[in-house]
Structure formats: C-alpha cells, structure tokens
Image (cartoon, rainbow, N blue to C red; front, side, top):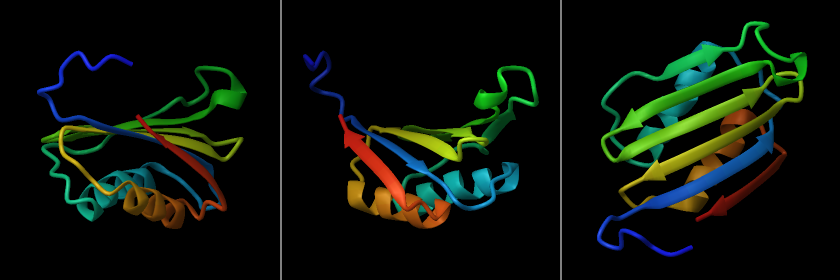
Length: 118
C-alpha cells in the first residue's frame, strides 16, 4: 500500500480471537480503558458502547465499542453467540504490538488469537 502521508506517524493493529470470559458493557469499557493505560495511550473521552439488542441477525448480536485517544482510537467488535471479538488499534503514537496482544489475550481469556499489523 502506498504511504500517502509519510509525515504522519501511524500504527495499526488488528487483533481477533475467541473469548471465554463473560462480557457486558462494563467489562468492555474496562478492556478499552485498561488497554489504553497498559500501552500508555492517552484517552480524552469515555468509551462508547452499543449493544445490537436484537435489531439485526441473531448470529451478529453483540457489541460495537470505541474509545477516543489523543493519538487516534481503539475500536472493539464482539459477536456474543460465536464468542468472537475483533479489536482495531489505530494510533499516531508507537506502541508495543506484543504487549497489546498479550494484554488482550489475558483480558478475554482467549486461547485462540491472531493479529496483524499494517
């Protein structure tokens, strides 16, 4: 992919996995806030969390969440029935990818996890 803005620092990380912990809005907020603190990324607002609440297909029920960072943001998507999650970190500040993956694995009690930086 051509770098259209080489003067702007950007780091992106996608983490996907199968979780085995219980998730609700409080736990999702704790994850987003905790990950930001763990990676020394500064937030400037509270986590915003939406639950699909039966408005879509049953297999897609879950949560969509976001926390704004001074240096961009973290998004989280959860499929409750499948116990699947996807996290996207997009920052204008460098962070340790392996720390982000390890924190996420522990938080979600995820035995299966994959990640890709881009």
